[in-house]
Length: 183
Image: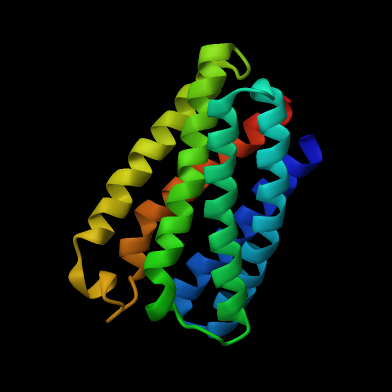
């Protein structure tokens, strides 16, 4: 599980760095590379969700539901990033769907953290970090949702607007690494 967890964290981290670089430079090559890495990340994240579900309580209906939500969310992220990379859709058309997919994956992090805390399957601080990451992410994404021009795809967020989201990404990476080393 450590390899899959660290692969998930590494591809997510690299994609986030490239995405930040794209927003700073507006160089489309960085965006394309980030999209490819998000596709690879999705593959790792799906495998991770299955492995973590086995760690939590294989037969638990709640663990299965949380796993399904996480897999669905990250599958959406991977699919739309792939379609974007292949030139089939652009950000203005998929930004909202990407946010919904990311929300599904964040729900997985929250579910794993809560179930892990309740069952003792994850360290207490790791569980609380997961819950905190998701709470902050909801605030950040909520701010995006209040901006009509972003929601309608009339403009892309600027680097200053992306900074809080990138901070959430760093916290997600920390959570993943910690999960991987405690497996």
